[in-house]
Length: 80
Image (cartoon, rainbow, N blue to C red):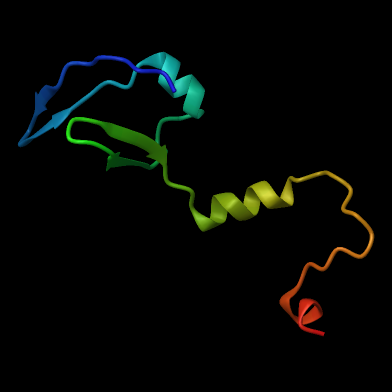
């Protein structure tokens, strides 16, 4: 994971940061994406993208690999 130093800037009643381009590319972030910040240490935070259910389903639908024969894809089949 890339580590970059950024300055905090005042905006309204809060603070904001500019995410460095290298991290934007690494995380494949785009304007309008939702992100989460998680505190992982006393002075460390991690940035992650919020994966919506819609986005996950969209990715699954574009999955183009051939599935192995006999693969069970529904809960009903798995419980038989």
